[in-house]
Amino acid sequence: MSKSLTRWISLIGIGILVIVFVLYRLGYLGEKGAEAGSAPPAMPAGGGPAPVLPVEAFLVEANLLTDKIEVSGSAIPEEEVQITSEIAGKVAKIEFEEGKQVEKGAVLIRLNDDEWRAEREKLVVQKRLSEKIANRLKALYEKEGVSLQEYEVAEAEVDRYEAEIKLLDVQLEKTVIRAPFSGVLGLRQVSEGSYLSPGTPIVPLVRIDPIHIQFSIPEKYTGDLKVGGQVSFQLAGKEGSFPATIVARDPKIDANTRTLKFEAKAANPGGRVLPGSFTLVQAQLRQFDKALMVPTEAVVPELGGKKLYVFRNGKAESVPVETGIRQDRAIQILSGLQSGDTVITSGILQIQPGMPVTISGWTSIK
Image (cartoon, rainbow, N blue to C red):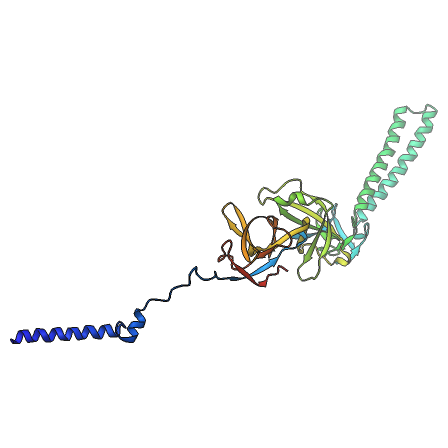
């Protein structure tokens, strides 16, 4: 046998050994290979039972539902005015204390009226003289000693002085500045000896009992609030809410914000609500005696409507629904459900209509 033939036989033998070794390592030979190459056990005839999906659910009950909105508002005083002087003059005396309650008509400021009073005395003297002259002319006229024209001129002079005295009395009255209504005074802006020009600010006066609350609501709710209706409001840093009555509303909707402004009035004993305070106003819109509410996560939006799954006879059943008022954790169902139905609230994405499910827990909306 030649050397080349012997070499080829050796190479073929080595190749066969390598192939056998590889097949053995891959599990195609021996007991391991027999197990690995054996066919898997066959499924029982007809297949096994479908898996049951554990879900949480919510029991639907009819309850009272009040639709409310919360909007921001501002407290404003019942009345507010900046006390000023109608005439020029020097402040002679300040009759008020800052921050105090005053009644309507209370004296706040007295201006120096010496010049006005001196002028009035002058006119009084001139009037008396004119009256004496008119009386003498009247006697002479009755005896035809003077003409009617002379007598009438003297009478007119008396009337002129009387009118000028009345004008001065009005001016003198303006030197005493009074409160136009009952309220609380602010901080004064003048001192005794100050010279006031007409319109110079002296002190603000506000009436804060009752207090008014201004707020605006979206256009779609404007038909639900009426003058005379009730609202409530809360203040930052204070517990509880305060009732108020709607007393007015704007005649038109704001074109920029699409809102309608309302004004409510509330009792404010002791000034607990200060003008300018931020308020959170709660307005009741509608009320339903027997509303059906479900957790918001139970409702599934779909093309053309909404649906949810109801637990019936151990299976999940798809039910189309119509929704209404939406709250933080619940939404109103207008059609598609009845009181006593069990709504599935978890596993919504895994559920298929008719799938077996079991209730593992209950969901609350409180």
